[in-house]
Length: 124
Image: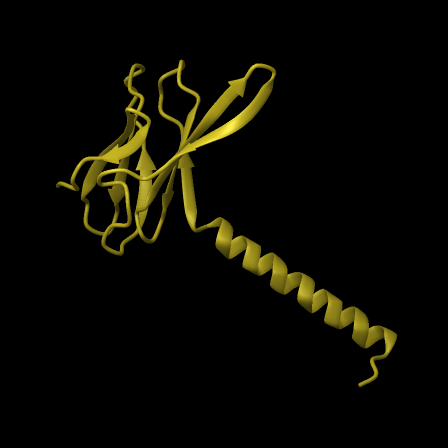
């Protein structure tokens, strides 16, 4: 199959737009939030559809920096399907965040304990 120069440009533009749309959709799958504690460099994430949590922070080994991400612990895994968001209190010593299912109003508090990300059982 032969393409004219114009057809080829249109085809490339279509692929570019399709790729941009796919990137836009995947970028909206997670929400990110830092806790209010000024001494914490953690960044929490939630999958907005499943409620699965994640947490990462900056670490350093001598002179080299790295991203340290923790595994999902008790209560931090996928929840019942919904629309999840993250919220932080204004309490400056708080190092955790709230995971909220905006469809049901259920909330969990999530934080790192002994190097593992855990969340309380959802409650209303």
